[in-house]
Amino acid sequence: MSELESSSVEQTGKPSDSSLDFAVEAARLLEDRHCTDIRLLDLRGISQVCDFILIGSGTSDRQMRSVADEVSTLGKERGASKFRTNNDPASTWIIVDFIDLVVHLFEPSRRAYYDLEDLWSDAAPVEFAR
Image (tube, rainbow, N blue to C red; front, top):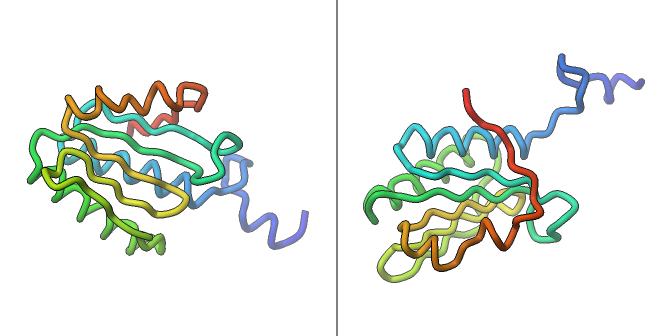
């Protein structure tokens, strides 16, 4: 194994994955900010658009906007600046796109309507609990 390869191997013996680490950290941030029904899905090998999708429900539009801002800041700190942010006029669905990770924050009824979990039902869930 080359020096470069060995430097990218974590103590677990698995190659490190900064986009996975960032996705897990973002999921934990959603949890810390009291979002509900948080799902982190691994789309590697399934989607050509992104590697991970993070879905969470907010309790209010204000909370969702605040969480979206914090996720953007976290990305910037981790060197994963956001590509763009989109939201509907009522802020019932906010998307923060980091290319490798796409974060979807929903108002619960809007989330049920679009049902992204069913759309990506073949994606493997990623554990993010501390």
